[in-house]
Image 1 (tube, rainbow, N blue to C red):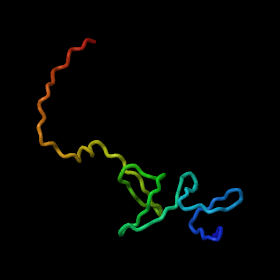
Image 2: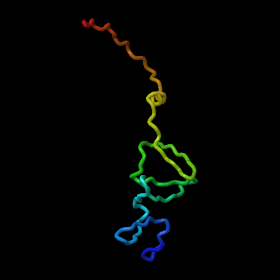
Image 3: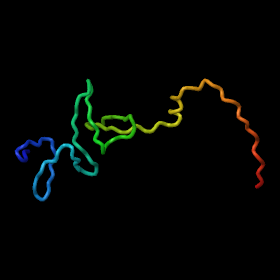
Image 4: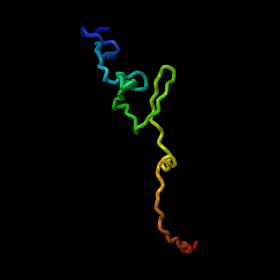
Length: 109
């Protein structure tokens, strides 16, 4: 399709007041209940990469990627459990001093 003399192959098209106008690639499009954006793929060394737009940013530094049919799904990694975090810590080489542990005071019910 050609709008305004320029090719808009792959560009989203918006219909407003009966006029067709091209939407730049960086503009979000609404297609169904989920927001989407067209993004550019590029090479990073021998890997294919994609920049994730700010509105789709994932928390943390790691993500899980999987393929389902023709879809590529990227999800944030679940938070680590406390046991997993503690397992990464190195043991301390020092001994702690003894801590006095007197019996508790009597409580009347």
